[in-house]
Length: 137
Image 1 (tube, one colour):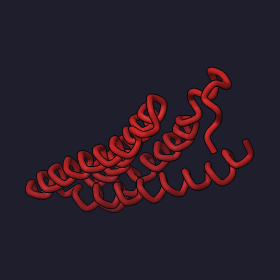
Image 2 (cartoon, one colour):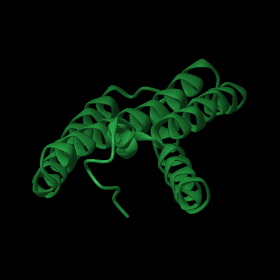
Image 3 (cartoon, rainbow, N blue to C red):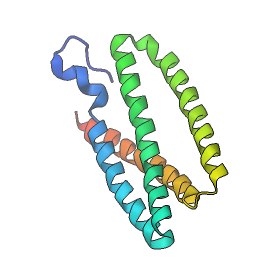
Image 4 (cartoon, rainbow, N blue to C red):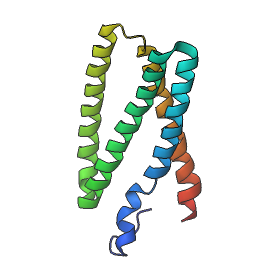
């Protein structure tokens, strides 16, 4: 449920209230992914796994901030900005991943696993935040 727009300054930031919790969770995941990567595949795997989580966090943070801005300007902007951002991000991700894959870098598989782990953790923590923390407000 959206809070009324004219209830005060604190309500202007409701769209981003969950972001610090999600960034903290992905920060912890980044450290864990780097550790697992280092233990299982060395420095390149550690770098790849950490970068993968970072790619996910950057992507989701960008989406959150852009859509919060669009919603604050005009809620009708959320769909076009969301779809445009989705198309741009996945096109860029595809181009970057194809470029990285063509190099033969040893950290490619850990990078992909880091992206997948980032998606799972970000989504799970977001669901937890919405169903527990935000539900109490």
